[in-house]
Amino acid sequence: MDLRIIAIAAILPLAACTQERPPVESAPPPPEAEMTCKADAVQSYVGQSVTPDLGAAILKASGARTLRWGPPRSAMTMDYRVDRVNIMYDDASKITQVTCG
Image 1 (cartoon, helix red, strand yellow):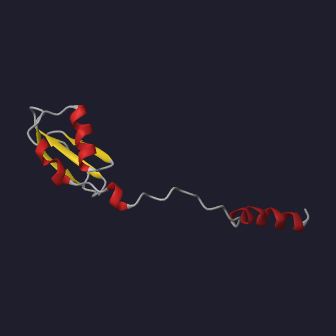
Image 2: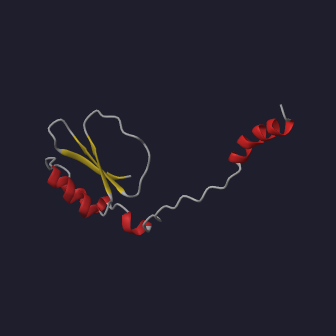
């Protein structure tokens, strides 16, 4: 067998690894001020009954981008997000706490 063919066959897979790939484009995140949650603005909702409409109202009033419900005795991640409002409620579906993060 020709040694040149063997050499080309050995180098060819390595050449495939060196090709440059175009950068992945992503949309820039919105400015932080636009998505910051304000928990002080929604403390008046504590004690009210949980409903989807109330969740939407809290989301809008807080200025947050996302809402996370916190049912009783549930595990939640500890990651902090400035654009998220958290609504914790009890067994009677009454809001016990509204926080950001």
